[in-house]
Length: 412
Image (tube, rainbow, N blue to C red; front, side):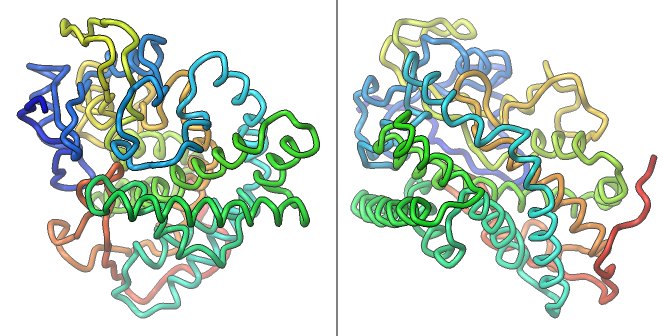
């Protein structure tokens, strides 16, 4: 097995910031060889422009069958996942994406705004009713986004704990055995088949109902594609949005002036986009395989090599973001890569954005004196995962929360 001097993923201190090693890599070795937890060598790409190239250039394939890697290397061990959008290239990918994209469009998601506002208000009211200190990860960062996502997809909330456990195993790089991953995948697959069958019997205004109709009535997608897409949406969606919300909240607790500015903003979107750049739950984009020799930043990457775009490194590249370690709500010049770029950009980005734009300002309007109950360096976080997040966020506040109802007049 080829020796690599660096082991991926790298530690983050604090978890809201990218690993310190990325600045050195961007400057000196923008394409660096790293070892995955499995021991397999991978090329890590750290500069913004190079990462965008990897995300869009057809010479970097998402076909895991092309990779010839052990299925366990990506933490997922099932042929179903080879049939989903994330693991397809042209021409299969555009065909399937065109069929499912309407269920994830901005217009479709925007219709959910009243429901997300209701869910947010209910969860914040429940949070305020607790006696501080409170673990915000458990009380809000898990409960709220999971409730929003499951309602959007059409998955019963009653199975929340099991879904979080299974998807957590499947996004953990080293904390579980291959057998545990296999068992989690089988249980998740069985659960989703039951949910899809229920959506056929009892349809509703949700994603799984729409996808089931396209499969069984219109026959525009296969049953295998339907089940694979359902699995990927939960594996890729549940854990990501949970940890991203926690990272954003901690970044704002570190900077009360930014929290107050966001709470009073008429349009929270620019601030949320900057927070998505500044804090990254994802350690990298999805692994690519080179279909031929490719030169990136002066480094020749041989055909058949594994390549990872380091999203936190790209989002903090000073060549594209002036003073990247500064949280700047007026930053507009360059789009971040948190949701990817190109053909494989995140399908669930619109629902994640809407949830964050509603929930984060509402939290700091309802609990303006929210603060950490421990020093930030005492927060426990989850290492060695495809995702970075806090295991626990103890918070407290003075017992004078803002009552239910509209917030203060926004700053105009």
